[in-house]
Length: 136
Image (cartoon, rainbow, N blue to C red; front, side, top):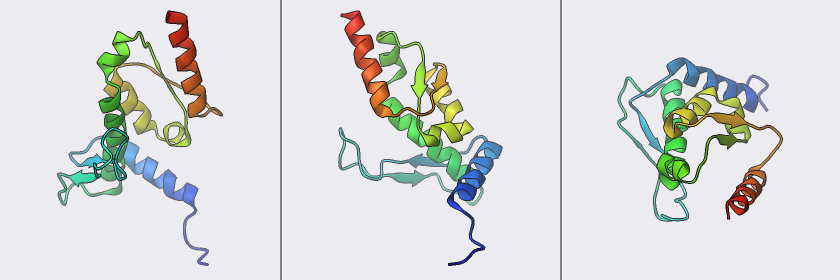
């Protein structure tokens, strides 16, 4: 094994650093590599590639935005507003460690993001059910 290779954490730190430094890009990434439940045959795509937008920062920004836009297609800002959602509660290491992804969640959904450590998706699902039952 080569001891000169960066660790996984070092690789992620570099990706996040260059993503935050870049800020925006014209590169587009649709990260549906294995489809979605509602569109199982949809494949991921990388578009608008130019020699000027193929840096690690560009790829990080485009991938982060692609992830958030994919979520927004499934649950739009309008849907959230219609159902009285006032904030988005976020969990997971990708969101916790990626400041650009956090900012994009707030921008795309137009709602404040509250980060919660040491919880998983089942916590969010349980909270959603409890809130729905309060309304009915």
